[in-house]
Length: 219
Image (cartoon, rainbow, N blue to C red; front, top):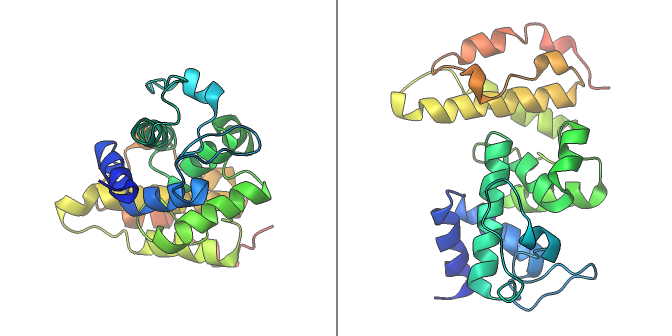
């Protein structure tokens, strides 16, 4: 099994989008298993030794003697990304930001941190494979016109339908609302977390919260 296939296997094991996870590993290390960053991040997933020892979030630690092992390094990277996706309700832009800059920075910013490195990181990964749910074409910069348009499109397309797609539409609505809230710096537009249970077929209700939205301008 080559490293790309191994990345796909780990992505599937932890319920990640394989295309996004491949792009993430490519961005992190170029699939060079011996890669070491200037600050000491190691391996395919550029795992910091301190994070490997004590990752939190229920993630299985990665021992120092295995941090350079390709399979274990990818396992840790995938499991940690799964934890970040769970923390941020399936929003890849926020999960990737937390992987890159730390969840504390994401929480403090209330979204993607205003760090050029992190914004470039998110945009590079999601730009080619982030058309699915939980990510926007310009998710790293939700205040841009493209990011707002993408959020609106997700909302407009979330108008009910087959039951099998209900959860996907819920995620689309949640992602769109979050992006719009960040774009206009209007916290009242930011939805509650998944416990709010935006129901299937309620896309129109979500849209009603944005009556007159066209008159708003990002600040």
